[in-house]
Image 1 (cartoon, one colour):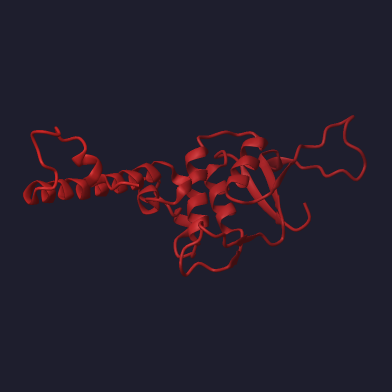
Image 2 (spheres, rainbow, N blue to C red):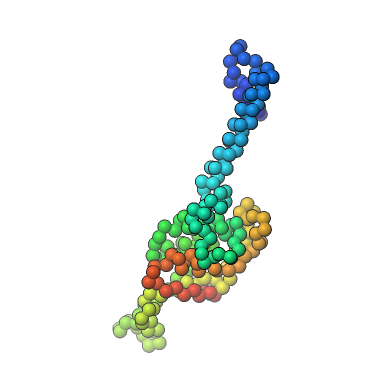
Length: 191
């Protein structure tokens, strides 16, 4: 493969310029180096356009006000930070069960949601919960007792733990995104 400088020399008019002349050759080498640096810089900028690459992660976090206030002081791996950025970009809003299940999935959690309804005459049976008052606005997030996040090649940074446990990110994001009148309960164990 020919170098970029050699390719630039081929662009010179063949009779008018001698591409091997010392001054012209030095200028062509300098131009080739500048073009190579610009090309490498453009690759970095292109990578930073997509948040899931992890390029420009600090800028994405700054723009999206991450980490969330309820996660300040909690250490997160690079992969978890990238998941938080992607999740925040994808979560434009919604109030359905499927929206919150998808939101949790984008953070790396598999959940189900249980809603409660008040007992009604003719429908409720003996032994059914009454669920009056605020139970109409309460929903329970059912998540595994232990959620683990494993380090992945290419998605983890130096110093990241090989495995991290915890559900703080799930609780934080869903509490921020829930409808104002809602009451969230988090249940950990069997789904």
